[in-house]
Amino acid sequence: MKAHVGVDKDSVLIHWVATTGANVQDVTRAAELLHGEERVFYGDAGYQGLEEREEMAGRDVECRITMRPSRRRGLPETPEGRLLRWRERAQAHIRAKVEHPFRMIKQQFRFQKTRLRGMTRTTARCWSWPLSPVSSSPGKDN
Image 1 (cartoon, rainbow, N blue to C red):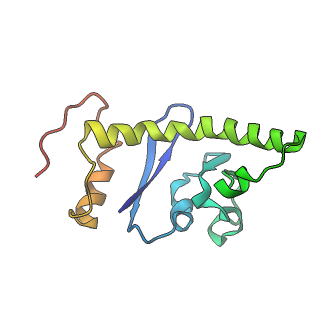
Image 2: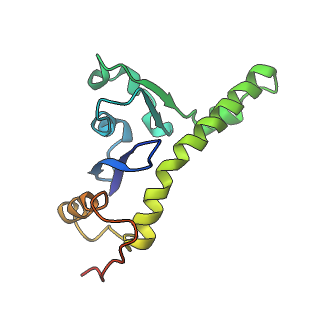
């Protein structure tokens, strides 16, 4: 099970949650994470090719997707290569904001092991994340 989370980069609030099986590619659900107000989409290498997908046609969103690790390691030691490395690092600082909600989900809401719960129950519980106050203490999961 994978959770795809749309997070506002300024407020770090979750605005959309989508769940899929682990065998579904990340890029297939990316268009659902956009609410229409954003101008820039930051994503990891799993979202490569998002600009060419038909769901993105007509949207005025700039996609800033990470390079694949093998390509990043192969960058030359030239000024252009150093500039590309710097750009990837700057984008990583912005993308890191989505990791805070995942820490909250896994540690505070005790949502670390999900494989035996089933997609319906997991999806319902995922939708409760944005609605829950950050400081709440979770009960025991039955």
